[in-house]
Image (cartoon, rainbow, N blue to C red; front, side, top):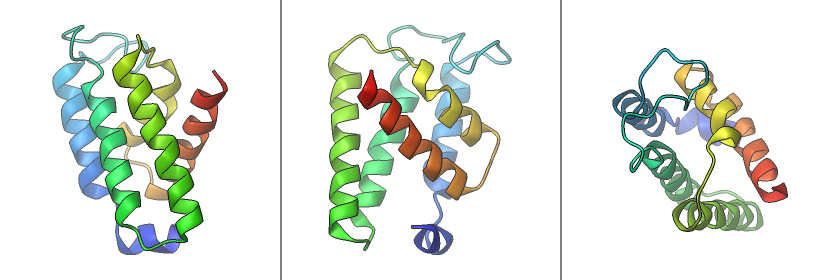
Length: 121
């Protein structure tokens, strides 16, 4: 995945998240998602981020067992965000990394950690 990310960076996906985040949340604040501008649409930056990650991984020519597993987990997370009252606290680290412009590899590792965390809740 690291080699693939180097050749096909997440630049656009992460830029879209940053743009949405800054239009949906007031900054600075104590935590990344502390001050939403609109309580009805505050999940949108995370929704679109997960959707874009799903599309990216679906198109990546990686090992099918790996991509199928991750895509399945991302889809479950998307359904969960859409269908239940959802706390954004588990997304704090991932969002902070994206907003800090860290490397795609760090974002990838944080995404995998997020999936593990959310599945255990």
